[in-house]
Length: 222
Image 1 (cartoon, helix red, strand yellow):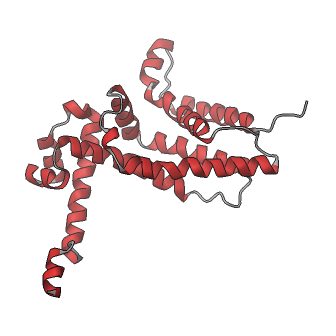
Image 2: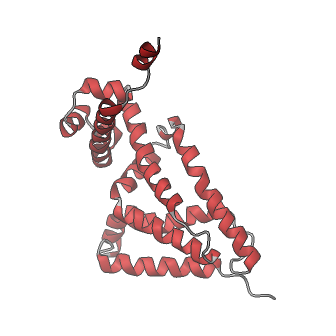
Image 3: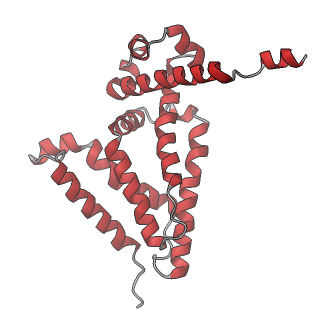
C-alpha cells in the first residue's frame, strides 16, 4: 500500500527536477514570444522550438495557449513581487525605506522590458487573461501592506506626511518607473528627442526620485 501511494504521489528526485527544468524552458520561451508578438501573434510551435519541447508537453503542463499566457503573466509579476518583498527596510528610516522601494521598482522595470510589453498588451485587452489568475492577487497584496507599514511608521516618527494611501503611493511609484519606458518611442518622435538614451533615462530617474522624496516630506506646521 505504501509503495502504491508513493507511485501515485507527486514526482520527486531527478524526475521532479526534470519537470521543473522543462516547465522553466517553456516559460522563458513563452515570455519572449508573448512579449514580442502579444497573445494573438505568439505561436505555440515557435515557443516549442525555442524550448526544445513538443506541443503535447506544453498542453500537458498549461492546458492551452491561454493557460500558458496566464502562467507567463504570473511569472513576470511574481518575480517583481518576490524581489520587492526581499527588500529589508525594517530598520531604515521610513522615508528612506520607501525611496529604497522606489529605487528597486524603477530599476526592475528598466531591466525587464518584457514586463513592460506584457503589461501594456494585457492592459489593451482590459486585463482579460490576468483576471483568470488566482496567484497574482495573493502575491501582490503583501507589497501594499509593506508600504502601508512604512507609511504608518513614518507618520509616527514625523518623517513622512500623514494621510498617504499605500495603494495610491504604489501606483505612483510604478507610474514613475513605467510610463517613460512604455512610451519612450512615441514621445521621442513627438518631441524630437531620444528618450531612450541612457543620459535622458538617468536624468528622468533623478527627477522622479526628487519628486517622490519631496512629496513624502511631512507638511510644515501652519
